[in-house]
Image 1 (cartoon, rainbow, N blue to C red):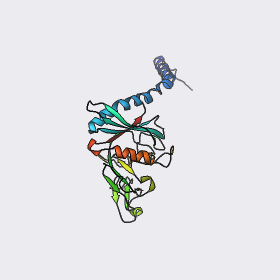
Image 2 (image 1 turned 120 degrees about the vertical axis):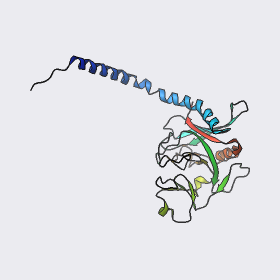
Image 3 (image 1 turned 60 degrees about the vertical axis):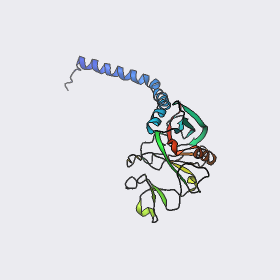
Image 4 (image 1 turned 45 degrees about the horizontal axis):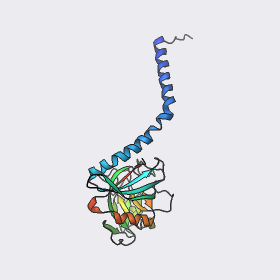
Amino acid sequence: MNRRRPNGRHTYALVHTLTAAWIVLALLPALSLVPAHASAASFMASWPYKANLLGAEQVVVVEAKSLRAQTGVLSLREKRPDGGWTVVLAGIPVALGKSGIAKMKEGDGRTPSGVYPLGEAFGTASKPKGLKLAYKQTTEQDYWVDDPTSADYNRWVAYAGNPDRKWHSYERLYQPLYKYAIVVRYNDDPIVPGRGSAIFLHLWRGGGKPTAGCIAMSEPNLLKLMAALDPARSPAIAIGLAG
């Protein structure tokens, strides 16, 4: 069998490529440390800018230690006349998605990262005294639709019929974890089918117990947060890596 001898130029190119690949592989352990630190620094530096774009003068800041973290720490910041931010509430433990943060699609078990406006409050209980946020008390006919094939996707719908005949998937808003809750306006301007839905601040099942993608906390802490929020200050939420 007549074998062709490798061309010298091709051999040099191959050796050069393999050497470059070896160098990259050798640097991977160091490179892998960069994104987490860079992302954390980026989040802490960027959320005030993004909040300003939204016109938000109150921001609920949720910090996670890693993209896979199932828990985090929440604080509330208020904008000062000089443009800086004052911490109003701090050190509130929260539960995050079972798969961490940085949501990509419906059902991935992640909490969204980024900065989003906060919507109205709701709950199975009556409106808390002194609450400034718009509040709606839910009934057994209230649903949040998470069926990407439905025109109702990522919307609150009141429906008296059988929900199983109307949607493939939905969230019942009349349930204990939603005794009190606040809507996070994720994926609503515009609504992108399959990107994720039904993201709320709500009661947790217990410390350290993750959610399906929401941000959850104890009832006393949630009520404290709700009481501090003022719709006149266009409250928003910022979720990302701790600095």
